[in-house]
View 1: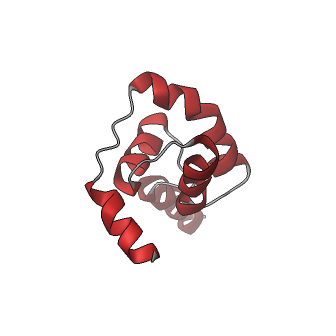
View 2 (view 1 turned 45 degrees about the vertical axis):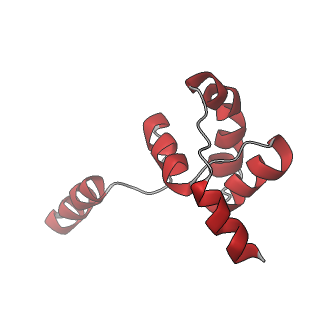
View 3 (view 1 turned 180 degrees about the horizontal axis):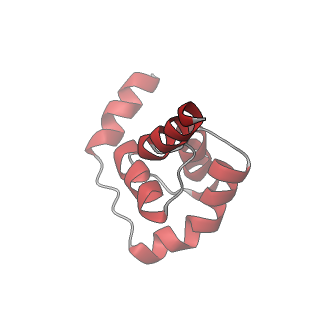
Length: 87
């Protein structure tokens, strides 16, 4: 059942305006960054509670656009490691 739903969702064009994204920004920040929920859990909450349905690729692009990144960039990590090995 869930597999047919995800296939169907992929074909639905859920285009949200920049204003609609901005309206969800604080909630996404709280769920994804503050509460450390996964992308999947955050998307599920938005769908179930706010009827804000979005594809994973678009969602991740929006996170990147806002700078909502949980991981240390590899370039930053390389700097940290380089400094640590110099000592």
